[in-house]
Image (cartoon, rainbow, N blue to C red; front, top):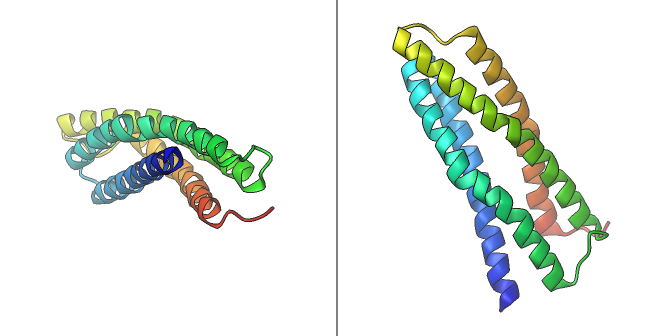
Length: 155
């Protein structure tokens, strides 16, 4: 029973983590595409909040519940797919940490532009470029982790 409960928590938290990331990226990309500083500021504000409420909490819960599952299943870090999953998860989180800072800067730049009635600043676009560039490897790493968790290849 412990295994099923922990597995449910692990799957639920991974769903929240991945879903929040993909949803936030979609809404932010859509808002930025419209180039309206007021809309971008509003969406950035909610994306930053969602990251702190959902992403930060589930980013901590994932390794905790994963370690617990590993122990309950009698697996070790020497299991190939487990080691690869942990490594790819670390890559994804390493990309996400600066993204939180970038989103905060993007929010502040967009808010200042909206209040001044100006277009989005060059600083905003630099932050956005880095945000996008870090999002791609994070997405790919999370997709690979999902595959490893489901397929559990024997390498």
